[in-house]
Length: 373
Ligand code: ATP
Ligand code: MG
Image (cartoon, rainbow, N blue to C red; front, side, top):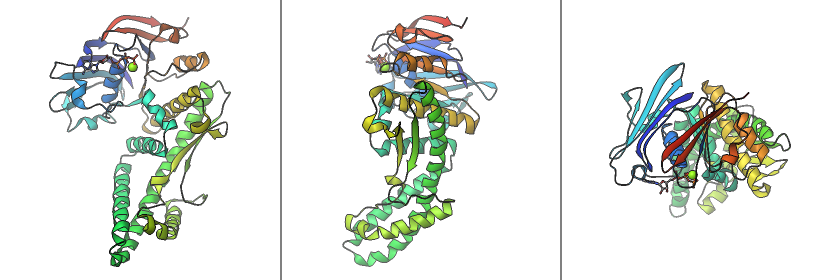
């Protein structure tokens, strides 16, 4: 998909902004605190997701104003469309003039993938961030996974409560079998879906990482199940059987600790660069490149599975990347509409096709077009 026009009113420091991006690479540049990330945040919100900065809706409205408006016209599914969100008081959202029940319903209507420095936690932090990343992507691609995941979390929580209760009401032990059975089924469903998606994502991300690093480094990602044998399992049925056995084997320890030791809540997406852990041994630039490869890989999977290319929002990616890596982002992601923010013109001197927008004090001062040849 392709955004053709953006209009913002009273969104953070962007009091009145109108811009017409191009269908390839759009650079938003300017000094610190001018509103570049605010613009990316506004576009991201149109995808129905929450702010990647964890902001409350009230914080999005310009100081001293009551309402903010974010609107984009875009081309998707071979037709012109329009998405709009208003903040202040009750948040409301529209798609093509029709009011939606909630802003979250914009998901799927407006597709985007975002990278911001806060996403570096995907490599730097513990496995929880990577599980969340896989789950969020799968929910977008397969909406029925939302229910599977919610059921799994509920059963896990109830089993954990029961494990604690059993320590002082031993007669409850008889009821544990039912929860173990449910847990085995849901663990298999969640972990099967994650592994299948992880395989697809890993392939896309490896190709992108190879491009970013000019084929000098190799990236691999694989779904790692905690407390389970090496597999492989032929299908979800066999995996469920394996979970049954693993849960039964860890029952004694679970009762002692009051927590479930085996299941997808302990799994990880293991990321290696040239065979070594990206988290423990990757440089700043390599970690940034790895997150980018995962995010761009996610975009590629969305295109393959949903048949729609999401808009790619890259906030502050350029710092810590060398010239070759920057050049790849600027000129080798053909087919996607990309927005990249940076502080300095020097960061995009190798741009061959696209537009740049100079942002100052919440306004676009200057717009330049670039074309090859
Ligand atoms: P950097 O290069 O440092 O990342 P940036 O251009 O991305 O800078 P933004 O994060 O977009 O900067 O923020 C620009 C300004 O927006 C900040 O100075 C901040 O104080 C201001 N701002 C944030 N929220 C609001 C709001 N609700 N109303 C008015 N201004 C706001
Ligand atoms: Mg910023």
